[in-house]
Length: 136
Image 1 (cartoon, helix red, strand yellow):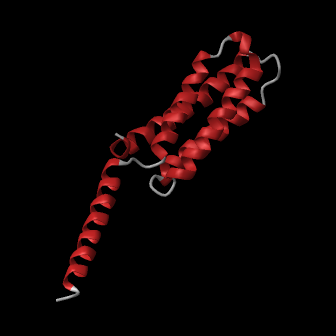
Image 2 (cartoon, one colour; image 1 turned 180 degrees about the vertical axis):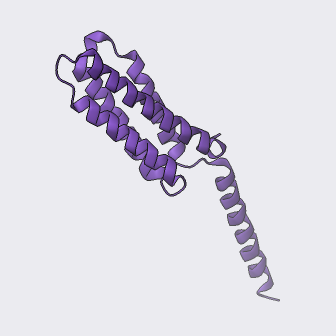
């Protein structure tokens, strides 16, 4: 009987640890949820650029998008491999298009940027839709 109180303490400890683990799992969101929000915000930052921002302002915003996308892809690729691959591909295409811009781009070159940006928006929207249940 002398070990009986020890068993009760051990059993209670196991129960408390299990409850904490379940609570932590149920209430916390995956890390990629905040990465997703950061990426969405950096994409929205494109719309706040003014013509005075110029190519350098656009390049700076694309670098932020690239960084946020990399964080998202690294955090979520095991859960959403096809969606994160699409995000990476679309962001890489946008970054390449922006790097190719001359200092005085033509309307056609700017249209290429708009098309690439639309690809990023589409791939991120697909990821958002797919991860909605885990990030809500």
